[in-house]
Length: 478
Image (cartoon, rainbow, N blue to C red; front, side, top):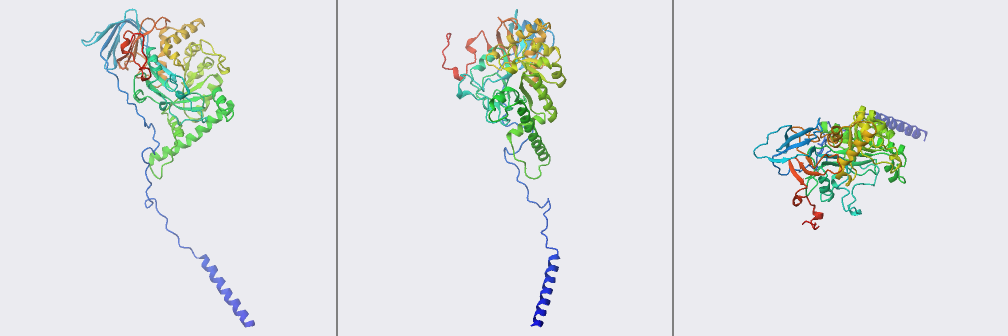
């Protein structure tokens, strides 16, 4: 028995030694696949890649037929320098061909006598909701505010624009040739804007200004607080935290896609429409337009822009811009303002009628804007009010300064000042012939050209643009 136990212990000892030795032997390794031998990644299909300056909804605008036209004996307010009394302006092939005291009419030119009349560049409205809040103003047509999340950078205003909005021809009759249509201001980040030419079209693409940059609509202050008071953010500090969180996400998204676009190695990141828009801002491809009233909040918004490396192109409404005009100038930020709106809520309480004049006096880019389909029809009168308010405050604003608030400064805000906004040779022939001084309440836009085509003539009602919505309306003279 003792011998059997001894034998069993010996066998057990030998087995354990073998097992331990085997455990220490290196295991067979599966050979690693090299990058060259790895299966190729499937490239993104159509719509799967996030590309800088992507243009999935391109402009299909084509200039309307025009003819060579010479306007002579008119006061020409160029917005590029001094006005030209008894001047002449030649429109040819959609462009401004000549301007000066004396311009010879080509044999084929339509000659218009402008005696006692004024010519200006076409008006540019940088803040409009025409088309996204069309007439009639019913809930079924209310498409300007996507109030489902504080950050809706994924929405694009052009997808709400109704080209048959009957407000469009009325805006054209007020001398407006270009406008930026923005989403509403209920969200911290409301989405992309679109720049339109005020022309008849069956589709919004047929109105889109070719090559115009998109804008990003942001909003601070009371509006997001009111809309999201039960969901958050409900305070101004909550607003700022919301902007910063969105930009942090966007920065990470931008880096991922920039890296992939540079190499196309591996699987592409997943697209996110909202972060894609914000990444385009960070790349400098989309301009930021911010609804903001108070001076302190505008200063904070500039700080946030510096933190994340983008620029605020213009503050809109900006009723306290006069308090920080030198700060706006230093940051290269414009101010799109009303002439005399104020006091209708707390953040608009400290408004002054000389706001535009003071902003301009400090060297910042001041400009008028409407934020109203009615106001857009008389922006020349709004600028006149602002000009005279400045003079009443002791700032001697000239008419040549004031016309810039209406044309070239808003053109700059849209980064289109090389094409429109002033009467200079080579620029688009977007011009207005006024019945008198445009800063008079008695003056009306008499004729309006866009790219050299006369699209409005007050003296010929048979040619007036009528949208489909109004085709069944019988007018008195019809």
